[in-house]
Amino acid sequence: MKFFIDTANLNEIRAAYELGILDGVTTNPSLIAKEGIKGREAFRNHIKTICEIVQGPVSAEAISTRMEEIVTEARDLASIDPNVVVKIPMTREGLRAVKVLAEENIKTNVTLIFTPIQAIIAAKAGATYVSPFVGRLDDISSHGMAVIKDIVEIFANYMFDTEVIVASIRHPMHVLEAARLGADIATIPFGVIEKLIQHPLTDVGLKNFLEDWKKVE
Ligand code: E4P
Image 1 (cartoon, rainbow, N blue to C red):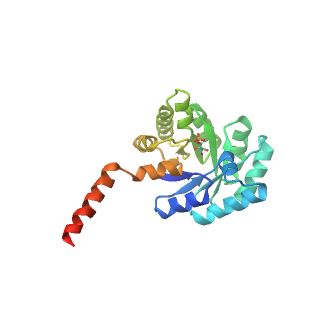
Image 2: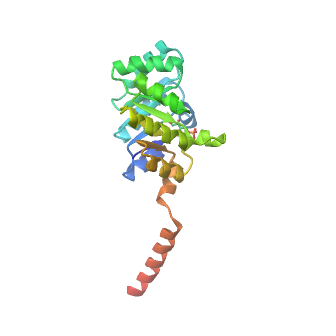
């Protein structure tokens, strides 16, 4: 399973990349706004900087809502770097844009997916990636991981090339379950990546080893 980091924070991206586990980055308008980025040019420059840090797919979201405008925006975003993937919300206009962009070999990540049916539709339109949001489903007492299970099974049934990005991850168990289900990618907030490393028994064990080593020295 590939690990993407779900952030626009450059320090977090650098720190995760240095761990040697990072395959890509996903951003969205909320994550960009959180970094205090103002204006289109600053946004483009920020995406460019991320692409310089990580040699892998970097999702940048289109904010247009009409097909023609999404396509124009996507072409511009894709021109920033060959690794840019254009994130497009799961709407009728978005799907029409995905079809056009697929024909131009511009990679797309269809976002805000909440059902297996939406994922099938996005894959059929030619999406490179789909992003089902597990945490937001769990938040409303739905079973986010059940959606992942269905999508992974369906994509395997029909040998869709579209890759499944498990998004809206809230905790390490989401990552574990995504791996068990055979999802292609998990996009993980930095705080959760840190939790993947830690275990209290590791900390206690290391403390004891270091104390015992003092008897050897
Ligand atoms: C990723 O592509 C999504 O933008 C992100 O995972 C959403 O996560 P959230 O539900 O924590 O905002």
